[in-house]
Image (cartoon, rainbow over the protein chains, first blue to last red):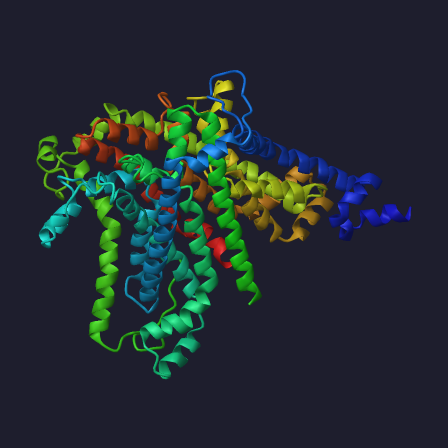
Length: 317
Length: 292
């Protein structure tokens, strides 16, 4: 009897694992039925359309399935061996790293600078923040199409600007030149990411201790010294966060590259996303494509784990 | 957006010592504002161009005026159909994600359920799975279910979390929201004889309205703008969405910039209008994680 009444106490709710086998009082039992009823639809959809295909990707990565045959031949690690020696994969990985580094650093630096300028009491701050944020909410397909126009070899406004300032020898088909294609695509992604950084950092700046900034100013620190030594250290956790958002997404980038260059010319602007798509749906190599997907998953997970570790370290300090 | 903390020129962080510094500041701010707005301006300008003018120079700003492009894109370009497909797919996805994650999030936060931590962990796992990790087998799964090319081929994966803003995010957001609500209200209702569903529907759900709004806004933008899902699962289908339809159109008819621009605007205008209206929820959703 003693166990029964104790099991019914709300304080014991957390230790349900043992109680389940002992005795579940009516109220809890009723709650449990409802919980199952409430969770099931979400869980079912999630299991069928996310978790099951996710596990299936891992399974397919060990087969040479072409998407059409009934049987899927198990080929062990041979897809992984093929991947390591695939020049296009190496190129794509290299491009992804460039994307992650430049595509993370430039929005964070530009965004931080703009957020600081707005924070120091600019008129129309709300208007500026809204304008900066607009590119972030635009559909990426639209952004990619417009930037394709901006870099158009003949009519492109970018080349026209170069002509106007006397740099016409630099004019070229930016997206058709293997040396510049990736960077031209990267440019299209920067305003949106910067807008996100500005908005998040501006919100974080509201919590910065102004009296310290004031003290530094009295001590004769200039604008950059105050920003670097006083403000930025206080923003560190949020800067880590925005960095990680752009970083983790960097390995899964697809839309801008696919629309603007399709990964070309050759594999010059290829990233893992566009190559995986091509292998899976244009060459119908479901098995090898899945191996590439596993690589992308691993890279995203590694960056996520690195980020979590960084945050934990910052919290401990 | 949060209102800025007022710092007058000359006070702690104000640069207001010289008008030169102020001028420099506004020049930088305006320069980046121009860079942010220019692409949008270019679309608006090109979408209003006369086809003859387009052949001369498609990207000179506002050199002619021809609103007929919108009509042509909507009818001849097929973007009217794509628009309604996108509306239906987005609406069903948003409603389903909100409803299902409120239910599941509430149960995980508040109801007695022995496996709740495991179930929550399984959902959270979905936040770390990029779409590429499920894309290929999901294609063949949808194919064998005869769903490929139907609206469900985008809706079901989008709800499940393939866009990154589906049930995993929803369950995570709503669970943490319900955890912050006072338990006493629910207990009071239970004493009055309310069933668990009534407690949820009549008391908890209305209280969670701000959380629901944040979630709905995030899911809307992600679904409306999503490109890869319709590209892969709606290929050659009459259920094509705006993003994939626009890509196919712009890639296929490279000369008709004015129609591609008009179509881009058809896709963009609802996004911009809804953003300006729901800005507050949108920013709150994105910054929520930043300060926890």
